[in-house]
Length: 272
Image (cartoon, rainbow, N blue to C red; front, side):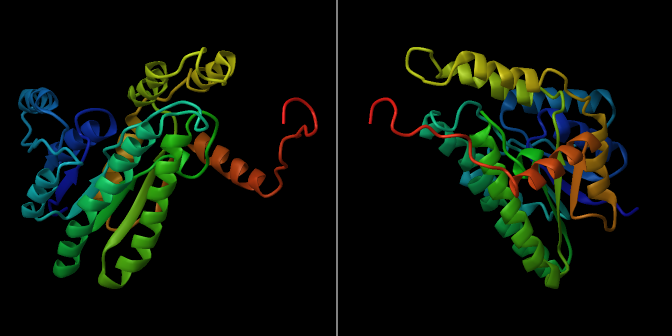
């Protein structure tokens, strides 16, 4: 296989880090962008220990100058992997936290992708992979901020796939289920930064159900291999959901949406 120049955002940990190391070992020119100097030093140290050639720039997605630097890298495959999460009831979560999630997961991701897509069109080749989530296809309680940002990313990816196809540019999504990378745990822990039983009406015992849903998470290896495959393959599916259990969950919840009824309401009782 001819080596490809691959930019993976959010490669300081998790899926992006694992895929970057494998792709570098297979001879690709991998640009594993990270969020800060600490992540850069850590990943460079591992790459050197494994004898890998790996470029590790700091690319803070919300920084225009950082994004502009990426335009000089002649990217064949862009993997939009960087994201942040925020947990808690969407009825009560501070709007600033929702804005921060959308700024990174949607606006900054699109701001990076647009000019790179233009370069790909000019060259007549390229692939863009959006790392979404099963939360981009179905939403549940207490993940509304994150899920809504991934729903927006799904719409961007689908529109872009149709728009760029006439120019020979491929677009795909990768939709992970619950994997043990630390991302989900951090998202759940973020609730404690603002939630209090004195100020919020959501019951703590209901919030506890969120932790129960993530009690058992999958090892990230299979998802990393899926990401590597999306970089290397000449073609493939538009959407890849992993693991298979998550694909079944998404389909069942989407079917349920067509028959779901509103919860019972009580009118005429209590204060007006």
